Amino acid sequence: MRGGAEPPDDEALVAGLLDGSTAALGQLFRRHGNDAYRLALRITGSPEEAEDVVQDVFTGLRRALARYEERGSFPGWLRKLTTRTALMRMRRRHREQSVPMDVLARRSDGVDVAGIVDRLVVRAALDELPEGQRRVFLLREVEGYSHEEIAEMLEISSASSRVRLHRAWKLLERRVQGR
Amino acid sequence: MSRHPSGRTLRAFDHSETGPGSGSRTSRHLETCDRCRRRLATIRAIRAVAAEEESEEPSDLWPSIRERVERGEAVLLPPANRSEAPRRRLGTRIPRPVATAATVLLLAAGVVVAGTVGPLDEWVDGLVRGSAPSATPEPMAAGIEIPVPASGLIVELREADAGLELRVERGQGALATLSLHGGDDRSRFLWEADRVVVISPGSGPLELRVPEGAGKVRLVWRGASLIAVSGGRIELAGGVVLDELHARLGDLAGAPGPDLPAADPPGSP
Image (cartoon, one colour):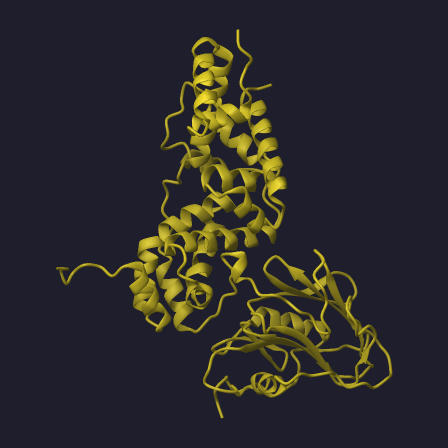
């Protein structure tokens, strides 16, 4: 038997949001907002842009849900919505070529790759990738989308997605290994 | 000594995605090959750095989101999946070659032709003039009503990433760009104007000529879109006005905002 304090699942919150409940939206935001932010940050490379993306996604979520079909999980759908919103935003501006040092410093937490290659070198190599290759690389290698899904998101062919990934890896390896 | 595995094979090996034969061959090779071990380490390091999460949390976005939601602000989001994307038809139906642009040229001319309108006109007019056609939120209309200066305008409508992009130009540079998103199979782009000449009504670029003094042109995107327009003001559902675009359209006319009656909020009698 369920306890009364058990939090509602996503489906119940989605239904509540569709009924106009701001509280349901708030719960969805508290549950998924940080994931959406991290995803947007990875794609945009800018905390400010990422915050704008997340605000837009959750502000427009109720209307966007009208297109949501419960064929997949809500978190998966939300990730795609966030990815596409971030990509749309990225297309609207030229990507900054430089990476602020404070961003690099923040990124120095976490995974220990010391002794293998310099993390900053890898980060710089990632940031220096041509935009099209960088997007495919992140969507494939980090977000785990298939080439078919990437092709759909970026409106390219799946063959182009594969080629871009191959070229991205080639560039990354070359730069990281200092060749 | 065996041949070095390719980068693709090493990446697949790292993710345990190689077949049993290839996997064991790669594994045996790595036991004896420093070069490939270094390469695999590089691949893993690149993946690890790329997957690093930002440790910094965002600022508290909820108050702002709640405020925007409670204000009734509509945000135009792209579809999460292609299956959600609207099929778009422009005016007299422009097929979809990639990067097709329907260009509406509003030029000085003098012939009078009425715009073609469809059966959805009544509710479109209702929205544009400020009264909702029904209590049902969908479908909605989106459009833009543009005061036309004597020098004419160029209004370019093109398919964008996840919707339509309307670009308004006079002279050098774009004065206003508006992306229209949303829509469904019923969505259509129709044009409507006083005294307009249809230059190319068939498929392909749509060109309209507007005579000097036409006053205004209204371009209407119909269907389940998110934006309504009234008196040169872009209104989102719920009566939110995009002031910036409104101001820029005012600049477009070379004068303060168009002197048109303000719309009543949708739903008012």
